[in-house]
Length: 233
Ligand code: DC
Image 1 (cartoon, rainbow, N blue to C red):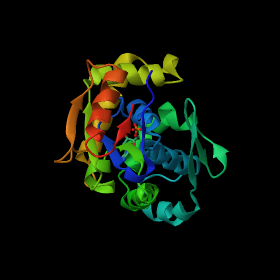
Image 2 (cartoon, protein in one colour):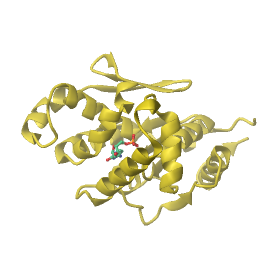
Image 3 (cartoon, rainbow, N blue to C red):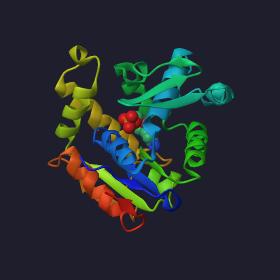
C-alpha cells in the first residue's frame, strides 16, 4: 500500500462526528496514520469518566459531588499499533471502558455540563498545534468549530450494531437485537440532550458508510484533506 504523509508545516485539524458504531474510530485512526497525525478518541474520554465515577458510586445526577471529584480524574490515551490504551489515574481500563455496564451509563454522564466543559477544554488543548484527527459527537459543532475538514459519518442502525458487536469483548452476554435497541436508545439520548447534542455541523460533509469499506471511506477523507495540505503518496 502506498504510504501518505503530509509536510509538518501545513497541518490541519480533522473533525469526525456521528452516531455510535458508524465506524468513526477505525476510520479516524487510519486517516491519522496516513497523515502521521494524532488520533483523539473523545468517546473514550467520556467512557473513562463514566467508569471512574461509576467505580466510586457517584451517579451522574449527583453533579455537585461529581464536579468536586473531577479535578482528581486523570485520563491518558496512549497510542498503540492496534488501537490505544486508556489509563485512568494510573490504572489500565482499556477493556473496562468498553463493557456493557459503561455502555449502559455513558450517555447519562455525557449530559453533565461541568464534565463536558472540562473534557472539551482538554480536547481543544490537544488540537492547539493542529495535526489532530478527533472523533466524537460535538467535534465539528463545539470542540473544533474551525476544523478545516469536518465529516459527519453515519450508517444504518443494523450495520452499526453489527460492527459494534464485532468489537465487543462480552459478545456472549448480549444479542444483536439488544444491541440494536441499546444503540437506538443511545442515539436518541445523544441527539436529544441539551448541551452539545449529536448534530451535523452546517459545514460538515455527510458520509454514509453502510455500503462502503474501510479503505473507501479513508480515501474519501484523505481527498478532502488535499485541498488544504500537500499529501504525498
Ligand atoms: O463513541 P463512543 O460510543 O465511544 O462514545 C461513548 C459515549 O460518549 C456516547 O454515548 C456519547 C458520548 N460522547 C459525547 O457525548 N461526546 C463526544 N464528543 C464523544 C462521545
